[in-house]
Image (cartoon, rainbow, N blue to C red; front, side):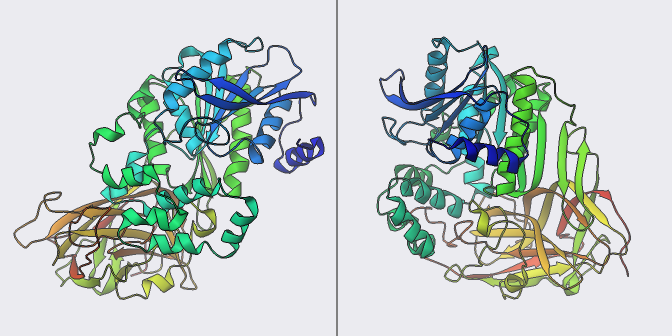
Length: 551
């Protein structure tokens, strides 16, 4: 049992509002049977307050530890809290198959709630990452009973995050598969594996063919990993029942969305925000300087989520907040309140120039810059949006930029600040020996000491027929980068990186067109990045405040 003193200490550290009660009754391991007879193990935290609304949390990550703390904290603040293990996890029956059963299991759990004497007729949902996927699976069909949602670092559709730029998010998917499998091993054995630096996972991320990587990382074949290696085409029927983005516009519950600028699901979460806004809803959006698993994200989610549930589920008075709250990175940034996302901005093109220059001036006639990409020695990924918080976020990119397979273009030091808020994209004109290649683009902030800090990035996989080829055999590759809010300070420089990959964040492109899961042949090749008036490679930034650069 969780020590009440630990709950009080956590609430003080997190600076949560005071409890409404300290008297909470907990029932554990309730068997909630769903339509196919499978029991889903469920814990219920009941405050001794009449007519308390209910918060539902469905999770594959267990009901102990942080979940137990969360259950107690919310219950003490006047909510019935129902925490349920997804099927195939932590005592629940059946097999865990990501996203397959979550809609039906969620609806059956709602039906169970309706039969409970303490259920007041309305509920809210709360959770991060996969706990958010299951919220979206249920949300549109829960009707008016769903009174509030708190969706943290998550999205209604995972397909485009899994295959970002039509590549494959290898680090995210394989690390998650390993994490899920690690939940089944003894605690001491897991701690030893972590202390050793997870050598099996490291080996698996470098292994080919990818169809064998799950067994190397976990010791077993992981069915969903095998399936995701196979069903990667953009309109694969496999994903139709596993994504819920088409139902977002039907959700009428107030939704709070909390994420970080270096979260793996941020682009998809902002697509959900746009869908809700297009449907006439007014969601709350908070984006901070966080990664997917950073402690700051958890703290913000709990504070924001509790306030949202108080206001929209419990109908308690709370202070008014702006619709959007963003943290602007860089020197002199900080938090900003906005009426909507994205804010008004001036689209500004920063053109790649000869000699490694970067400028808002139009490009001039110049020869292309070239790099040699070898998938046998793939360009490594460094920081950015990753599943594991310790490796994610802004880092100094100088050691990557020193590699011969990474090209960079930098502005002169800024005379005045340049503040960028909104979607970021690039157009890169490429001529390649190989028809199969990746184009990775990263924006960095170079400080006065020469340190190059990544701000946002994106990757696109190029294959025959995907993009037009001109008479000079040049392909214009549009690259969508992660959105951002960043202030480039005076004296700093903007820098654009272009390379042929970022491994193992993205699976390396073998250059052969072989299937994703079975490719073993690796072909190296030269590619040229053009930046002349006929092929104006450029970065497109949404600038809200701009100064002049020194000439």
